[in-house]
Amino acid sequence: MARAFEQLTAFLTEQAERAGNGGGHQPAEEDVYHGLDKFLKRDPPNFEGGYNPDGAYEWIRELDRIYETLVCADPRKVAFASYLLSGEARTWWTGVRGRITPAEGAITWEIFRNPFLKKYFPANTKGRKEMEFLELRQGMMSVGEYAAKFEELCRFHPYYSVAADETSKCDKFEYGLRPDIRTAVGHDQIRNFATLVEKCRIFEENEKSRKEYLRGKGVNKAPKKKEERRKPYFRPPEQVRN
Image 1: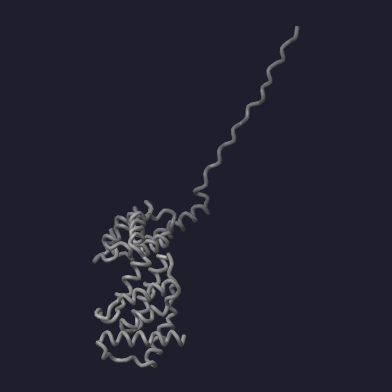
Image 2 (image 1 turned 60 degrees about the horizontal axis):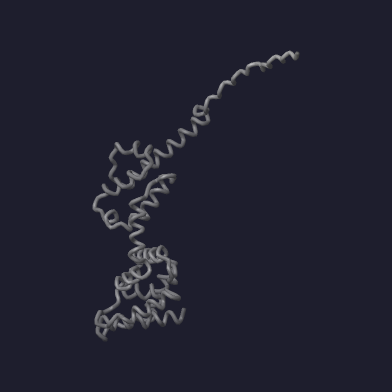
């Protein structure tokens, strides 16, 4: 921890010098310590590198989520993120950081984020996620499971993830529903995604309750077949021997 704290202080000092061409404000050690302490209290995950596209993407998303609530400048975001790197990922970042020239100024979060995703979440992986989203159908999933998978994959498709209105998103979700649910909610033409999911969930629960009720009443039980009366066994007469 002490060594990491020293590295963070040195990195932030370097960043300040880059931004100010050598005359930048030097971060106080106490200030750096409290900033790191607040960051670590959010319980951010570590990242070791290797081939783990989903893990890499979720790691960046988790840091973005933390940074939304933790007010800090770009250099600190980079410093805190690099603190969480270990193994192959730390070696990678050391190499990338060494290739960034002082003329580019301070290393921003985007300068860290973009090459990180290029390295650990390559374009072909993103393309597979897009295709998985386009081919997604509810199948045997519940509405809740389908909606969760839909939202998970939706963010990888540039059109559906940034659509100004939710019409296309709702159309895509409806198209993947099971026919009985799609028929039940389709005529309402719901174009708010949260409302659409809730309506589908309510219909699914109502249908489940209805079927359970009918089963309890024996309505859906197949009628018993009438037992066929067996004809008496006919034994042919014995032939008379000569």
